Amino acid sequence: MKFFWLVFIFLYFSTPVLATTWFVEEDGSTGFSTIQSAVDVAASGDTIRIGPGVFDNVHALPDPYSMDYATLFVPIEELTIIGAGPDETMIGQDVPYEANQGPLKVIVAGETFGNERFIIEDVCIQNAYQGILFEGGGEMEISNCHFQGTLRGVFLYSGGISLSDFVTIEDCLFNNPPEDFGSPQHIYSSQQNSLVVRNSEFEITEIGDSIHAGCSGRQLVGNN
Image (cartoon, rainbow, N blue to C red):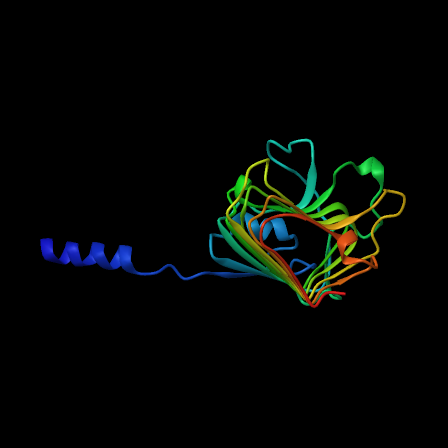
């Protein structure tokens, strides 16, 4: 009997936990009509697939951003989000961002909030002060996404310390920043170790005006 329990315990703890894929539809037909409701039940390593539509629910953030709002807050160690395509799945409000909305964010992730790896693909992130705030380090991959109407499309913030992280932005489009807000920075990086931007397109004519990257490993490849 003792041998049986030892074998059972070994198999229980050595069996890998299978990741789950959750589905979000605008009409709630999958059980989730908001992305945040799916994130709230997801576990590390899971994937969330989002159907067509505009997903613009706004939530108050936890400390230290309790006075700020975002559409999506990611406190999970590892998470992947995949849309139906940047022309089909829009995350963020459907009207232009205005100054009286304060530092409105679309997505908040990064190690400050317990998120170490974040992957997002095939969505449009729109109409906010910051499209993605990724704070405190970690790994992030952004591919085939449109950033439309955001003053700071991707904002990588270190909190004043040098970070060990890796951020890749690939096949993305940054356009239509809000008017009358000064000079937009489509990608802002503060003391990241590695930032790779590949095959992406920026509305601002010179890429140096679009990317402010204070990091040691910046690579810009095939961008317009």
